[in-house]
Length: 425
Image 1 (cartoon, one colour):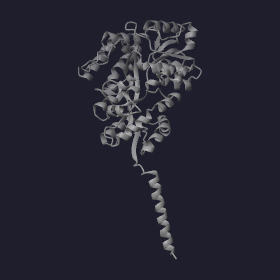
Image 2: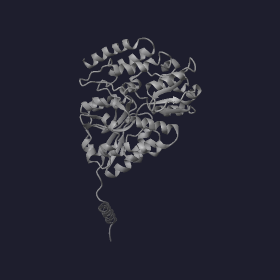
Image 3: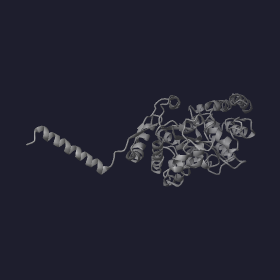
Image 4: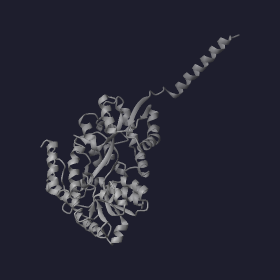
C-alpha cells in the first residue's frame, strides 16, 4: 500500500505530466517583448486607449508584444527632448511637424524606409504624399503621420444671406472673395467680413499661393520679396477699411471665437473648429470652402498641421515597435478615427470614403480640409529648426499692421532685420 507521501508524489507527477502534454499540444510560449508608446495627455488619452484596445493589442499580443502606453500630461516636447537625451525615451512617440526637423537632424528618429519596403501592411504609397514629405529629410522617412489638418474658409451663412451676397465658393480668388467680404461688412459698423488672426499660421497660406518660399538654398528668408509683400498687404489691408477685424476687437482670442459672435462673416481655420462649433454654437449655419486662389498664379496655398508616430533610433525593440506602428495606422484604425470625427486620417485611399459624401456641414467641412493637403502650393507648418523664433517677427508684423500701429513697409522691414540675424544673413 502507498503511503500518504507516495500518493502525493504520484499526484504531483501526474500534474507535471499533464502540463508537459499541454505545452506540447499548444507549442512553446512566446517570449514577451514590451513596446513603450507615448503621446500627450488630456482628451487624447481616451482616444489612444481605445485605439490600442480595438486595433493594436488584438494584433500584436498574439505575437508576444506587450504595449505599454505612457501619456504625458505636461509639456510633451520638453519631456521628449529630455528623455531622448537621457536614453529613457519610449520606443514610439508623437512628433509634431513644428519641431520634427530638429529631431531628424539630430539622428534621434529611426529612418523607416526599410521597414516600409518590407511591410505587407503599410507602404509609403499609402500615405498622402504631402504628409509623408513633411516628415522626410534627405530621402529618409522619419514618421508616419497619424492625422492632420489644413486650412479652409469657414463662413456664417446667415450674414451672407442677410447682406444678399453669394456664399464664398471654390472658384473665388483673392479679389472676388474680398469683394464678397466687403459687401457683408457693409451691413453695419459692428459687422466684419473676415477674422484676421495675426499669425503666419493663417496668412502664410496666402503667401504660398503666390509661389513664395520661406527659405532659399542658403536657409535665408526674404520677407521683402514682392510675392510675400503682396500676400501680407492683402491680408492686413482688409483691416484698413473695416472688411477684416482683429479677433480681440470683438472680444475673442482667435478666429473661431470671432465667428461665433456673429459679428464676423468668415474665418480661416482648420477642422479643429468643428468641435468648438458643436459646443459653442450648435445652431450656427456654417459652410466651408477651399481658400481662395491667387489671381495671378491661379493656385491656392495652404499649410499642413500634422503629427506623426516616430520610432526612437535608440530603441532595442525596433521590429516590434514597427508592428505596433503598423497597427496604429492601419486602414481599420484610421477609418475609426474618421467616423468618430476625431481627426483627419493620413491614408490617401480615404479621400473617396463614404463619410465625406454625407450631406452634413461637418462631413463636408472635413472633406474640404482633407482635400486641402493636395490642392495647390501646400507646405508643412515647419521652419527648419528655428520653430517659433522664425514665426515671432512675422506674427508681430502682422499684428502691428492690423492694429494700425505700423504700416506694412515699416513692419516688414523690422521683421526682415530680425530674421536676418536669426538665419545668419
